[in-house]
Length: 188
Figure 1 (tube, one colour):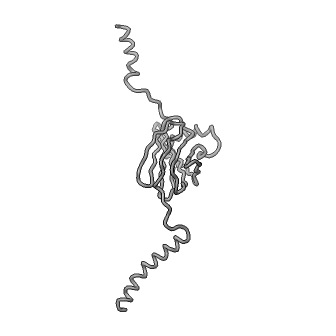
Figure 2 (figure 1 turned 135 degrees about the vertical axis):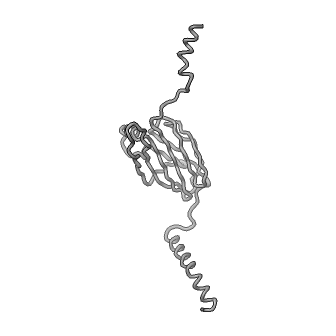
Figure 3 (figure 1 turned 180 degrees about the vertical axis):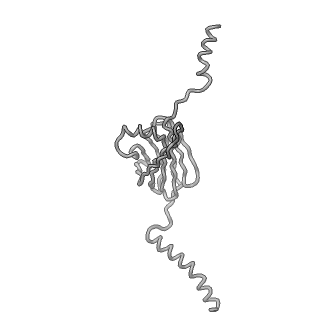
């Protein structure tokens, strides 16, 4: 009986709380879509961890990200690094963000996501253009499941020079309507 009490006493710290890995990466990913298929992708990490991790790799940060849409890779058209403000000594620094912008085809159906720097699980939050929000837990260095993109993108009604000309014509017509109405009502 005495031996069992000793074993229980030694095991108590392990039974009191579940074992958890320390997430030094603090990875958070947010992908926000607009109706025209454009997207803003924010990949946030602990800046100290990110600096150390990137030392091992050559090439831009975006080479570590894969947006696989309907069987082909989509590359961002712009990438910005948003450094966190300096942290006070002893404080945990805010996350550093790589903000990438780009555009998917209007008829995009599925997306698979991959981020090749991380090991720890992290949330991928999808803000769809139709207002729905989807959160998927990614198991670190792993692909996401297939994410449904269908039905949220729409081509603009008018684009380019034709759209600009149409916009000017509509504004001109709205300004002329009161003048024409006044003239038709008896030239007062």
